[in-house]
Length: 208
Ligand code: 5GP
Image (cartoon, rainbow, N blue to C red; front, side, top):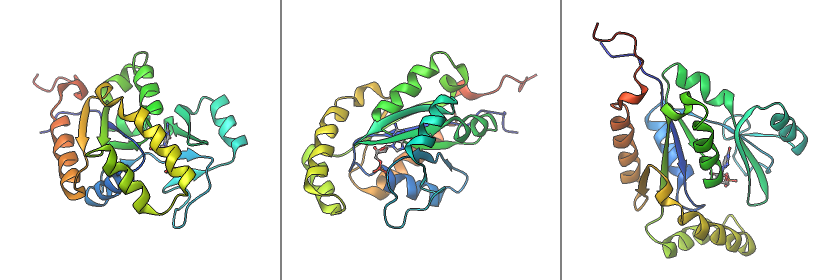
C-alpha cells in the first residue's frame, strides 16, 4: 500500500528561449496525470493558443480584481504584460495528492518561495527547478530561430535572460536543456525521485 502524500508543485522557470513550454507540453502529453497550472495573463493570445488551456486571457481590469480579491499566489509583470498564478490552480490539487507543473518566471518563483515561509503546505509541496540553456549563445540562437518576435522584443528578452540566468543558484534543481527528449526524461526522473521525499508524506499512521 502506498502511504498518502501531498502532490508536488513543480515550479519550472528559466529564461525565455530555454524551452519551458516545449518541455512542459511534452511532459504533460507523456504524463496525463500531471496537472498544468493555467496562468492568467493580460497579453494577447498567440496563434493557436486556447483560452483556459494555455492561459486565461483576461483584461487589466479583471487582473486587478484578482489581485484585490487575493486570488493569486504570485503575480508579476513580464516583458510588459501581467501574469499571475491562481491559488485555485494549485492548493486543492496538491492537497488531493496531484502533481502540478507551473511555467512561471523567476520573479514569480521567488514570490512563491517567500510565501512558503508563512504557508507550510506550500513549503512542503513546492520544488523550484531552473531550466537553463546550454549557453547564452545557444539561447540567443534559439530565440532568433523562433522567428515569432521582432528584433526589439528579442533584445529585451536577452537582456532579461542575462539577469534571470544569474539566479540558477537560488533554485533547488538545475536542469540543462541541451536536447529536449533527454530533458523531458531528466524531468521525469527528477519527479520520480521527488515522490520518494518524506516531506510530503501525510502522518496518518502508515506503520501503525
Ligand atoms: P509567454 O508570454 O512567452 O507565454 O511567457 C512569458 C514569460 O511569462 C515566461 O517566462 C513564462 O514562464 C512567464 N509566466 C507565465 N505565466 C506566469 C505566471 O503566472 N506568473 C509569472 N510570474 N510568470 C509567468
